[in-house]
Image (cartoon, rainbow, N blue to C red; front, side, top):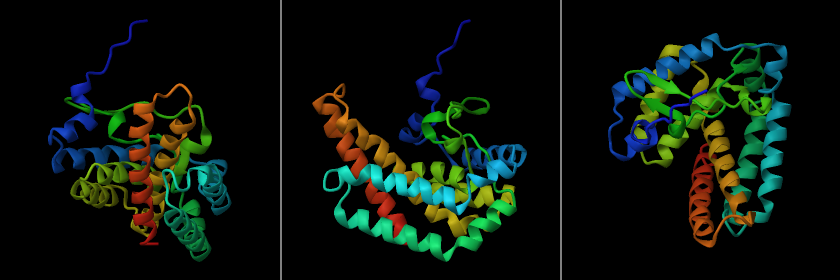
Length: 231
């Protein structure tokens, strides 16, 4: 078995740095993701992963796992703000989450769509789907598209993020997506901040990497706090 290495210069992250990603490319991407979601498997069991009890469990786990980073990568104010706004949003929108489950918006998704997992040549290839964890793979399609939108905003391309959402809604027909969009962008940014924060407790990570990780995690948590203000 021979595996070809994907050329770095064709990864979307690099192309964004070089300002080579335009609206035409984003339009193609939105269409590909919308069509993938339409065909993606769904069932009663898969739907449960987008239900309010499961979403609440995921958030409680996030808050518990980031307590030790308060004052280090996330400020006490941001932690409190996000926790309060998320809890309040879930209480106010129980019917909306139930409706999205009933409308089969929860599907077997890719689970990790961000610019580092998109290869752009003549065609667009989205690789490295999560196969090892159902909780990451079975989710509301809004959460999946929110990950890429958040990633674009983190890289200071909110223009492309807005266009991505606009085109995705057109191709998918998901008119209520924007009602949960800041919620899921907040979730995706918070998880990124959490995962990067874990590096600070890893003895195999050197000092320089930890300094860089601290800065990056802080930026993700600040972005999550910004999204939370809209909830």
